[in-house]
Length: 83
Image (cartoon, rainbow, N blue to C red):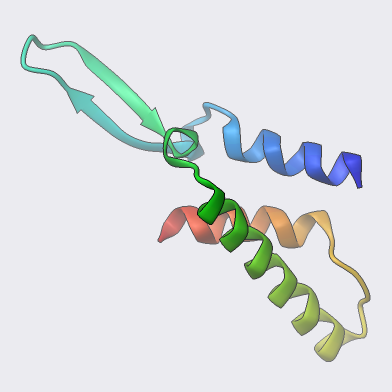
């Protein structure tokens, strides 16, 4: 469980190209890149968990695959960030 949590937290908080959300240009010309981590909240984390649980249930019903997997959580992060 610890490794699962670690993987998801790294995905959510990494300042990578895929996690870029927007670039802000200030009046003085300075620029700053904001990442999804800058907008995280308890509600967003809850949404990610809820999405992952739905994916796990769907995987069980369609393929008989039991349990919540890291792949479910990582895909839920991507899906949540897209919205």
